[in-house]
Structures are given as structure tokens and as C-alpha cells.
Image 1 (tube, rainbow, N blue to C red):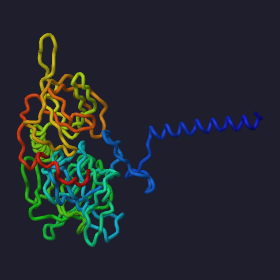
Image 2 (image 1 turned 60 degrees about the vertical axis):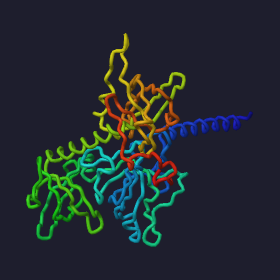
Image 3 (image 1 turned 135 degrees about the horizontal axis):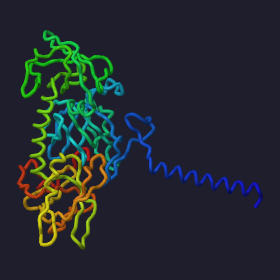
Image 4 (image 1 turned 180 degrees about the vertical axis):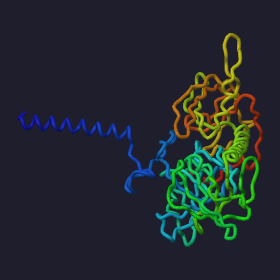
Length: 403
């Protein structure tokens, strides 16, 4: 081979190695569009079945809750008006559903969709629908569809209060006019002013939280630091004030109350998670729990009892669930068995970092990898839920939107 030929071969080899390195780097650091990075030509992150998404991959959409289906964990928002929408496409509906590991927050604590009053303004993190999903979006006003129509899978949904609390946002009252029922406030991000003051509408029934009770609207004065919930956002300005919190004590009171609601909801329906592995010979099922439950509900799982010379964890119950977290006939379908072990696993958005190893007395078809189940800790009573809250008898229903 000539000198030039040897050079070209060597150069070709180096280029091949470089391309392999680039491909490996791309695999380790996948490129996808986010709200803060990437242009319109960059694709949004596509969810993978049985895997949790990256922390920054969701797309923020805000809007007002106009309807929901608690069994399907599905809902419709009237999407906020934004500069990215043509005027002709303002106020259009977005139909979506919660991901199985998706979380809902209300009043600063975990919640179910049915805990949130209709008309509450919400913030969400959304992913695009499955490419195989051929369902059509909701049309309104001469067949118009919201520009956000493809974002049908929701990872996080929270009211303004929860959103502000998570981001350390507060508002400082600049002025209050009780004759015109207007309140002007300045956004503070971690205590620093952000943007220009906004003028909100007060309502005759705006609830003003303070300490362990409520105050009249007349108690609102310049200089107070507040958080709030809105309705009618972006229709005729920033929105109407539904609730206002004046101090930390009242915020804690609201969150503590909602947390009690959440605890009851989960104890009666089970801890959600999905199956990660099954050992058919040993009849063992491994379940990774989702992070859409309060960590205090995991404490009963750590209790052990003496069995001969060994220690074994208490018997638990496990039931088959759908991606919507809906169950069938829990009382008759549940499979009981010992909780053999608990393992710490990496935490991800959607994963709480705990894997259970359970030996149910019968391996059901629904106890398969990537399938959703619900686990009842020792001592939790398995009840028959109201008909409208269980899937039994609805197997032939049409597919719901957002899945």
C-alpha cells in the first residue's frame, strides 16, 4: 500500500473511532427539546414503556380544569393563552391523562384529581402521546385544535399554590382596591422581584387564609407576602383570586389537611408501582414503587416479625391495576403473601427509590414486567370501592384519551 493509501486508511480509522465515540456520547446524553433548550427542529423526549423519564424532559402547560374522570385519571384543561398561540386558537381544550407514576398536588400536598375543584388553574408537565396513538384531539370552534394537542400524557399536575411553593415563588401586595375589587401584586422569585406587577381580580367569596382560620378580604393590605390559587386565568387578565394565604401557618394548615386526604386515599387503594421482574420458579415478584405517594405511607412496609430462627416481613396484599391506577375487584382479586425483602434502588422522576420483593400465593397474568400493580401494607384493610371507582365490568369500554 502506498504512503497516501496508508494515510487514508489511518484517517478513515480515526474518523470511524470518532463517530463511534460521538454515537456513544449521544446514547449517554440523548438530545431532546426542553422548555429551556432546543429549537423547534429538535424533537421532544419520547416516553419509553417501563422506563421513567429524565427530570427536564417534560413540557410545561398551564390551564384551567374543566372536566375530569377519576377512574381513568383523565382530564381536560382549557389551555392558557400564550404568545405562541394564534389569537384564533385561544381558550381551546387539551385532553390528557396522568401517567401511572404521575403526581397530582393540591394545597401543597399530594392529591387525587377528584380533590381539585372544577375551574382551578393548574400547571402541568406533559409528554407527547404515544406515536401509535391514533386518537383525535378535542375539536372546538369550527374544528380548531389547541397547538398543545399532542401533549396528552401528564407527569405532574399542581395548583398555583403548590407550583409557587415548589419554586419558592411568593407575591408581594402592592395595592388593594376594594371598590373595583382589584389586587396588584409583584412576583418574587426566591425573594427577588421578577417581571412587572400584575393586577388580579378579587371575588366576593375569595377565601383569605390566616393562621388556623380565615380573614375578611378587607384584611388584605399593601406589603403582605402571599401565595394564591386562581381561576379564569388569562381570559380577562392574570386571573381571579380564589384563595389567598397570608402566612406560613395557614399554608401548613392547608397542606396538612390535604395530606390526610391523600393518606386515606392510598390506604384504601394501595401503593402503586410496576413489576420489574418475576421469578416463576421461586414465585417472586419485584415491584418498583412510584413516587406519587407520601413517603410516610411506606413505614408499615419496614415492620418485621419473628418466624422460627428467621425474621420475615409481614404479609402484604397485591392487586392488578391499569395504567390509570384503577383496579378491578380488589377484595376477591388480591393475592396475599410475605414481603420477602425491600431494596433501595436509584430514584428517578416518578420512582421513590424502593423495590419490594413479594411472594404472592398465586402469580396472576397481571403480575408481569412493566404491568402496574397496587400493594397493601400489612394492617391495611382491603375494601370494595364504589362502582364508579373500579374497572370491574368495563373491559369493553373504548380507549380513553391520553394513554
